[in-house]
Length: 533
Image (tube, rainbow, N blue to C red; front, side, top):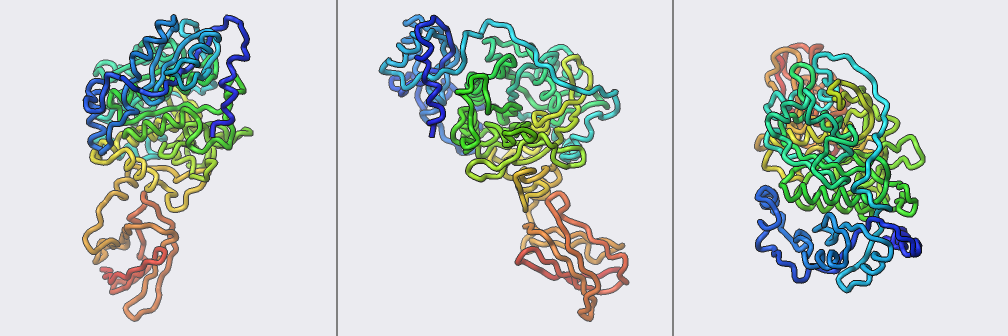
């Protein structure tokens, strides 16, 4: 399965040059570790344990930390060690090529993987330049992106992310700690944790402002002017992306961040990052590897999902180039991969498409990524485009839904968002299951009345309109009206989704009296006796 990655192990070809690189060392086992599954509180927070228990997820050996004796053995050799990974059972190191060869021969080591050339932890980085548009301040400047997903209704329902823990993995959060639109987040101490995996310190308010923009979609707040989709949630900010280069190290930074988020008890990860091509072509992925089982970041995302975390990620901006497809980790099964649409709901041309190599639907859902309104590092309002801006809109919706329905599992949140989206009955590889919406989720989760899975109301009809709700949708829905003599007087073919279920029907053209309304969806049908007054 990993034949295309074998080139990564050929670090011996660097010869005898004293080149220091970054490697990930995979250990063979966890034998002798002082940690046990019976005492998870030694390596997981109470919130993390509670999240697992609430979703009936067991703690396994994969959750155990790396054996500290193995790390010490490398240190005793003079090797610089950095972040460990419970899930991969290994450690990131900086070592010369000759040292890497020696490490690979150790009995405790399974393999040594080159993840990036050079020792970068102390180096400076280059700020990425992106094209943006200016916008003038106006009431609810970001209303379009919120309304498209029904987030105003979610806020009116009292769900603004309170009590939900969200981790954001990105390239930098410049300005978040000092600008006014994030003041509520700071004064209420809802930035719970920060870590910079690129520079190995806690300062994430540096390097780049892409993460600032992503976070703003969710968490910025300026009364009457800008409301993040989940502006009262708790946030964990992790800098995992090095904007000055593109190497496999960033997939491992993502894993380290996911494990840190897992240990802290985070419920949702938003990752507006994707990896398919690298500065070292030997690290590149191919389209045939988009199977949900190959890329390291994809497999790490699956491990996060299996621990009860909802992973929301950008689908990728490859729609206009030769790659076209979604980028890892968007190919992972269960990852909520988000594509981009315009304000009118049509797919943005740059938005990556599916399917995966094993023909699964991707992207999963869509949100506004063309001209998304954001807050910049300066604190000013602007717009930016990309699936990376669509992803946090959906993550905001997910936070509000989880707050409204706290008994749902992460898997169930994924299911209700996809299965209630605008084209859930006919998903494709361009829009996935369509655009999700809070009202659609509410309708989808409504329990039908006993023995009345299909409902017509009000009945008698006072006025000219009635509504119909059905418990399962198979389009088109055919509605036929007969008079009291059995003569057909009206018929319509209707496309519905969970946002317009119940749907409304106008009978203004009919006289008062008794009618029979037959409704058919797929192979199911029922007839209602209706009185128009």
